[in-house]
Image (cartoon, rainbow, N blue to C red; front, side, top):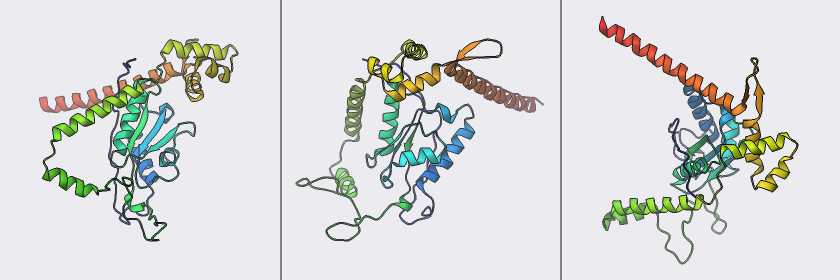
Amino acid sequence: MTFNNSVGIIAANRLPIGKINGFYKNISPESLYQNLIEQQFKKNSFLKKSEIDYVILGNVTNQGGNLARRCALKAGFSTEVPAFTIDHQCGSGLTALITAANYIQSGEASIICTGGVENTSQSNITIDAKSQLPIKRFKMAPEPYEDLDMGIIADWSYTIKVDRKLCVIICLLRHKNERTFMSGFKRYDEDFKQSLVNLYQTGKTQTELCKDYGVSSSALAKWIKQYSQVRLEDNTVLTAKQIQELQKRNAQLEEENLILKKASAIFMQNSK
C-alpha cells in the first residue's frame, strides 16, 4: 500500500536549549514551548488550535511525566488532543518529525505540532543506586558491548575517515524501512469517513462502529466532529470541516491581499 498524502511544513522556529543550571534554570520546558506556540499561531493567523490532531515532541533531559502532554496543555491545546514524547537521544526531534509526517501520509492526521523541546538548564540530577553518586552520563549499551562516549566515537570516526556519503545512505535506508513499516497502517478516504458519520447520525453507537469497521475511537470522534453538518443562515448545509477550510482559505486570501497592497505601495514609491 502506498500513501499519496503530501506533507509540508507550515511554520518552523528554534527553541533555546540552555546548559545545566544555566540561564533558563527557572523556566520550564513547557513554558518555552508555550511561548513558541503563541508566536507561531499569532504569525500564522489562519491556523487554529482546534485543528491540531497531535502533539509529538522529542526530548532527552526532561522526559518525566510525558513532557509533550505537559507542553500541549500549557500551550492551550484541548485535553482531547493526543500528545506523546519520543526519546531517541540526539535524534529525538528528528524522529518526532518523521513520525508526524508518517501519521499525515497514512491519513491518521492532517496537522501536527512536532519537533524537539529541551531545557538542559532544568535537567534532573539522577543518583546511581550503587555508588550513591550523581550519574554524569547514562549507559547507551549493555554488557558485554563497549559503551563509548559520543565524543570518543566522533574522534574515532574522524581518525578512520568514515565516509559521510555512506552514513547518509545508511540513514536513508533506515528511513525507508520506517516508511515500509508505517505502510501497514490503514488509510481512510473521505467517503469512508463520511459514511461512518452518516451511520452514527442514524443511530449507530461509536462503540459499534469502531468494532464493526476497525477504527480507533479517537479517529471516529474526530470524524464526527469534522463531518457533522451545519445549516447556515441562507440554508446552505456545510460540514464543520468545510467551514474550517473556507475560513482557512479566507485567511489566506486576506494575507495575500495584504501582501499585494504592500507591494503596490512599494512600486508606487519607486515609480515617483
